[in-house]
Amino acid sequence: MKNSYTEENYLKAIYKLQELQASEVSTNDISKEMNTKAASVTDMLKRLSEKELINYQKYQGVSLTDSGTKVAVNIIRKHRLWETFLVNKLKFKWDEVHDIAEQMEHVESDELIEKLNDYLGAPQYDPHGDPIPSKKGVFTNKKMEVLYDMPIGFVGNISGVSEHSATFLKHLEKIGVGLGVLVTVEDKNEYDNSFWIRIEKNEPLFISKEVAKNLLVFNK
Ligand SMILES: [Zn+2]
Image (cartoon, rainbow, N blue to C red):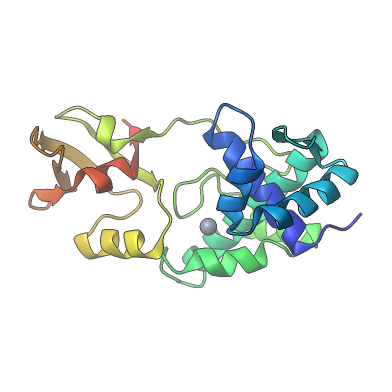
């Protein structure tokens, strides 16, 4: 049974919302995430429910069924493998690849995706530091933490970002913060919760609370 691009995008959105919140996902949450009217969301939810991809009852929360989860995780796998390919092999910048991967994630051929995975050396993380699920849908569980929560004196590596907007990624590039670089927390400013960090052995760098909250690190 083939799913349309829109259906796949809904499943992906519901998956993302389920990850973010402990409670059940509401029609309202989905309509915000998908940027569409609640009425069109309801229509789509009925369709997905008929295909047994989601559990949905009117006026109640929405959750993915096992087969819905499988579809969503597979799209995420394809998305993240394509992003890795675009950055590592085609030399796109990490802020340029998301929109392209949004198109490529809908490719149907499993054979292509498995060959892509082998070609890339079965990577565990995409260029934003997000884990790439295996073919069986298993995510690696090395835990990332938020830079903002780290104490003064912390030393680790930038492992990802929790905001994927191009403006944020361009900003990081401008201030010289990239994936994998060594970061030290030099000082925190109590007044506005901004940070002084050091990237590799460079001069100390001032970053706002916002930036610190959107940077993920691996604890050494
Ligand atoms: Zn992306």
